[in-house]
Length: 127
Image: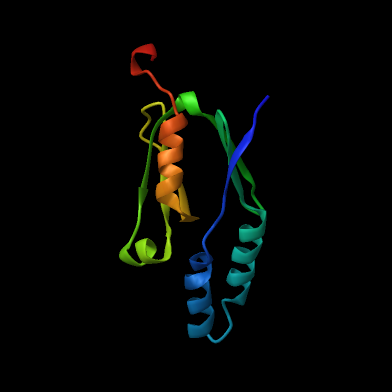
């Protein structure tokens, strides 16, 4: 039976650019902000003891289930502001593919990357 280890949360900086766009356009971009608010509420990223789950989107929902044994690499990137405020972008690569799963504005992305790499067991000789 799977245990829920970690629920991933977005950082409040997720709203920075939509709010700036709304201010600059005089409120015209408010629909964009509302869409980002809905995504903030409905996006769901969490991990169990052996699986990484993500459900992203409002109108077009994209669901992913990645077993830790399939994860080849997890890394994160932070800007200076992200390092100061505690958010970043997490990149998850599955089975040596060139495609990266990208999750932006993640709270404590460095801790999350370490958690994934700790539990992701992959032996490249098996592929």
